[in-house]
Image (cartoon, rainbow, N blue to C red; front, side, top):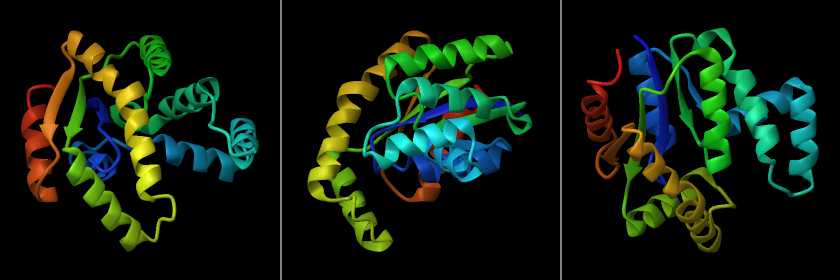
Length: 192
């Protein structure tokens, strides 16, 4: 089965959980930018060393470096039949970079999934995650800031993907298994 997907949604919408479940069902890797950063840093790659220096200084990794890491990851053999990108692209410049990478490979996206959840549900989920996982970065202020950044920079990408006929909107509220089944049903005509 082949599937080239992006999964989008605000923090707390279940992207990581659902990306992993879809990856298992579809037989393609789930790829998050966080995982790519960690692998490059741990592997001591040139890109990883550059990213580590930037992150250690408390700065955000620039698009140019993120795009290069994603390009390298998508060139790996396990992505030949597809992938699920989680957390990328986050802005219009990254969309352009991804378009170029896919064009170089002669492939296109099958769909862009947007998981939706209302703000109160997102805040409740993230508060629970902070307690369960002991995440110090999940303060109410930090969560509100990340949700605002998503709304400003990433949410508008869904309009662009909708114009291309790629957007599949799925309700991210409910039992994890139910959300997975809604995703599979929504993607049934697009992957395979």
